[in-house]
Image (cartoon, rainbow, N blue to C red; front, side):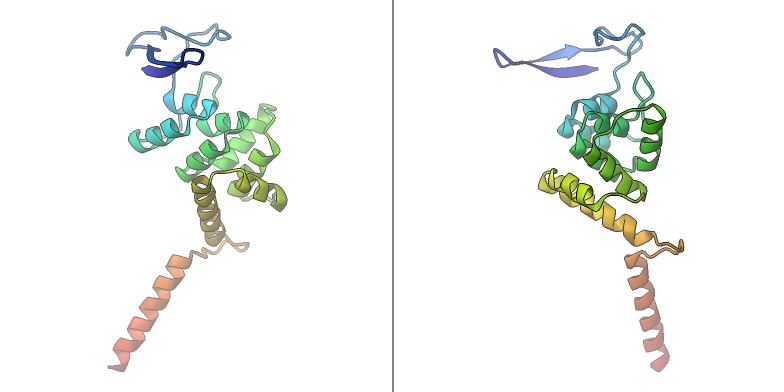
Length: 186
């Protein structure tokens, strides 16, 4: 697995081989003593590399969410490192906000209040509306639109009594009923 690197002083761009298939990592973070296997989706989420994260989400089939060497999912890593745009894209791809909140709480991980408000809203928990709005305002327009669309979809499909309130399903059933009544009139 290769990682593109930038040498900031001379502005040189290059590539670094992190690991080869079947081998241990050739390069690993200093703090780790155990063998490290790079996980592209986790690394992109932790480092806030939104273009890479979007590419991985598009290219890699995700049947289960990968975890880093400490057992954290990409969503947990993105909120721990305060990368809200990455968190929004992961939530859009189906990451579980409720699970992320629960696991971060179990580990005593501190989550920024804006990240916590966003995750709470996606998990269906009561959240501070002003913090949620601040979180949404901090996003670029593209991610803000995705977050609002996803939240509206979640709110549209969940109701207090557990009945599915999907607006698309409601309009489809209305159209069907109208079509049936028109057929009966002919």
